[in-house]
Length: 251
Image (cartoon, rainbow, N blue to C red; front, top):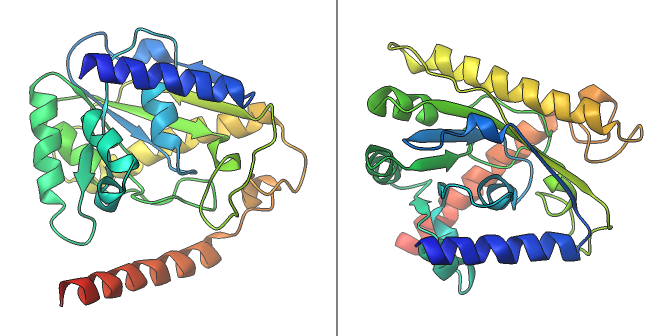
């Protein structure tokens, strides 16, 4: 997989240069040079995983990201994800299969990436996370690297029309200091993890200093992003729709 991963990383770099992205990577020293680790990132746009796992500088370690299982069924994206060694997650079936695959990857000394929120968060501030990252860390002993990606929502995100992005968009990826959750219930450590991710996101928002009212900035920071109540309602409706569609396909 090394050659494929390296080639895709180079294509990604060519792509973001062609679109004039201002890509800024911070905290790479927090990614271990060897051994297992779990990279837990917020989720604001459809291409977050690509920025988290493929951004330069090179050489960098490969990462197996947990991705929605239906993406692996798409004509171009699916084969690419498989070639990169990514891990499919059956969100409405048996997610334990993905967790076992992630554990195997970590046991072999690899890096696993995931979004604890489980879906794109259109408020653009981290919501309550799921406990998968913490449980993986507790089972394998791998440290968690809290990570923030910011600006990728301006390229392609939920509930916004796709189009040609403006040039010069700043996308920032920040890898925070390793976090080792203690034994015990995962809920408290998950809240602590999300607090670390949120702090990194808020730092990125402050550093960007976007114009007041910008649609990609959280309402809590003076932006035009939808509020938590609206987002929660629409996300719950989306989950119900996907489950109903899946039941229809299985019947």
